[in-house]
Image (cartoon, rainbow, N blue to C red; front, side, top):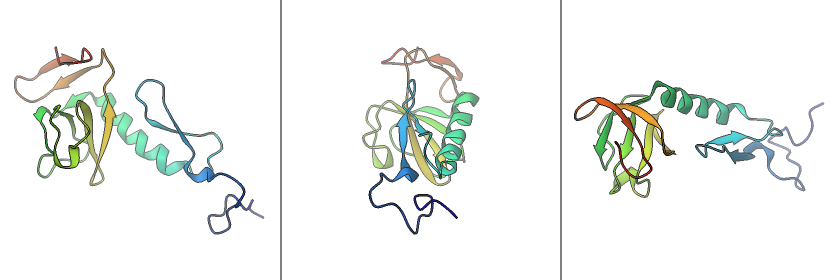
Length: 131
């Protein structure tokens, strides 16, 4: 028999909802799955997709303040400090387009990416600007 807290139809009313138990990672603040979360796969899969994009290391553009029309799956953009539309409030973060939604990831000082817009080149984030 299943434990009642694993069955979404019969959660233990006295326990925390373990299905959504997450905690931020130390460097990027990404959602990591708590060790006691029985339905971790959805969160893990989402952040595996984000990690894959980050490891690829290509920023499509660092010249936009609003989402582009028709972005490709897995495209990554740098949100200018004047973010608008779906990017409002996400200034100076990376915007990654996955499955029709935007996922925002803060940059850490010292991260380096290939920026494909403008004059394509490897760029380093110094905590305030691309150099």
